Image (cartoon, rainbow, N blue to C red):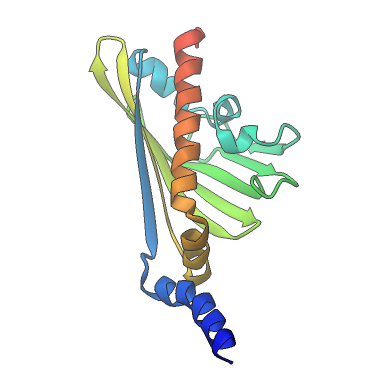
Length: 178
């Protein structure tokens, strides 16, 4: 009986902690790219370019994609669907563009879980032909997502994936004539 009680307490601990954990998360990552601000902005504002650097999209070469609207403009929607649970199903819509500075999007996850996140990329000049690119990813977590985030340390995993994506984006811009 004591062992069963101990097991139940151990199982209950993450659920109890999740009651008091943050309901929102924000990940902010910045990278220095050796290209002019306009070149970095022009590349990053096109959601379809994510196929060349975004770790999540690149995880499944057989991903099914659909596009609605004109890429690089407000209202453009990049939708994806994959049998790979790490990729799942969802869509990203451009919600705001501040020319040469910032592109904002809403990401809507459908599978393997439902949810929304806000994301933006912001460029700022550092030196001649050098640009800071900042990628911000933020969202709200319902109770079960707080439990999952805590158990799987998803914020750390998401941060690592964004860093990997930014390194690939940097490599693409610095080695190719984009």
